[in-house]
Amino acid sequence: MIKTYGGIRELRPDTETCNDWGGSSVEAAARFPKKCLGRADRTFSQGLQCQQINSVMALLSMEEAAFVVHAPLGCAGCCSMANDWFRVGQLHRGNFAMRNARVLVTNLDEKDIILGGEKKLRQALHLAWERYRPKVIFIFTSCASGIIGDDVDAAAREAQEEFAAQEGVPPQVVPIHCEGFKSKVCASGYDAAFLSMTNYILKDEAPGETIPGLLNLFAPPTVSYIDQMEIERILHEIGITVNYIPFYSSLDKIRQIPRAQASTAICKVFADEFMRTLERAYGIPYSHTIMPIGSRNTDRWLRGVAKIMGKEAEAEAYIAKERAAVAPLVANLKERLTGKTVFITGGTGRTFAAGALVDDFGMRLLGMQTPTYDKYVQEDVEKLNAIHGNFVLDVANMMPFEQVNLLKKLQPDVFIGVPVWAARLGLPTTHVLDIKRPTLGYRNLVYLGQKIAAQIENPGYNKRIAAYASLPYKESWYAEDPFKFITKGGA
Ligand code: SF4
Image (tube, rainbow, N blue to C red):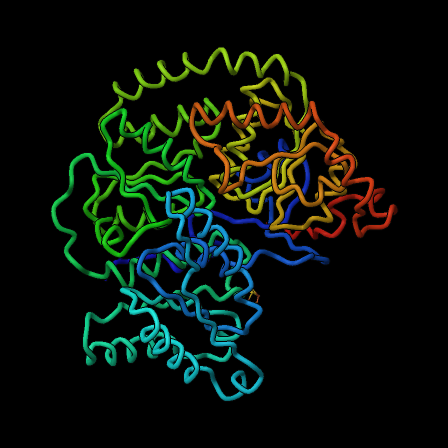
């Protein structure tokens, strides 16, 4: 049996994980190695991103798959966003006859919470099979199914046996244990999706012969198709072929994972535990560096991949060529952006990568909001401290009330991240987390720079939003300490 970790990021033995902290980045970097950042908590919280959404988003675009969300109806709300991404992704890939993802919800209600929901789960599995004849059916668990103790594995096993007794090729039925209460670190949801691949799809099967030059490239669903093509192009240029997993992937591609020469991920917090599992189980080396946003990070990411693939000379030649090609464009952007201040928020992988990106344009980092702090974040914070000096660090899974308080106080020239609240303050905003636009690699950094400059130079749209849309906070909140509700928990 392949040995895996349990799927709960807070319980990893090799690193402390903190979800609630606020202060200066220099203080955070000094405290973490002494183990005194602390497992803090909040006495007031606006709600966290549930890990189930990450499991759903990671897999919803899988080919020939159907999905059963074993949950009350509300838990499946995230499927509409994931489905939107799935549809946009189809369009970008040239499929104009877009379809919806095949999702069924068991709609657990009060009666099921008392009497158990396994009957509804079995019905949903049979309905998914009859309707769609998929090759694989994924079951997403929820807080409700976990609390009442439904035996989802047994239901999956029984359904699998029943399908096998019928005509046709039976689907693989794969439970994903992504109950929201298990973890406050939303990236645990990605781990739950990868654990299901390890435990139910790859299992103990012999991997087959290694395919020379093949790289497992694990990418989160937030990576746009333009970015996928750009990263694949870069890798092809240095003689590497790619097994792109799991967005728009398939069972066959998953089964090919153990045959790759090496693995890497586009996002630093995506598939890192899975890559460690693959190394333990199959001896597949992996590179775990940073997200390739901005020239400095793309260099670092590509050098990490080249090292494990034996392509170092090719990578160096390529880096020199690409850097020279974009240098005049970056210099132009630097003229427009030098000295501008920025606040960045987003997933852990993107925020820290974007922190280095803005240095390409001579910008100064004022503050950052990121979901977690662990030893991998520590590396990034140390690097950013060396580039930008001290900045405000808010370790928060969501928490817009802290974000707007910080933005009011810091008044950055531009906000990078999900713009819903910052736009209502009239600040120029742009993204680094957008499945519809480019972000990654040398060429796309120019696109990002143009977006930042354009927003700063043309702030009228957000100013009008601010004139007509208000935020739900009293003025008195903006005078408070933004970290007032964080209780520092000690070591
Ligand atoms: S699984 Fe739990 S945390 Fe996630 S949406 Fe459902 S109730 Fe909320």
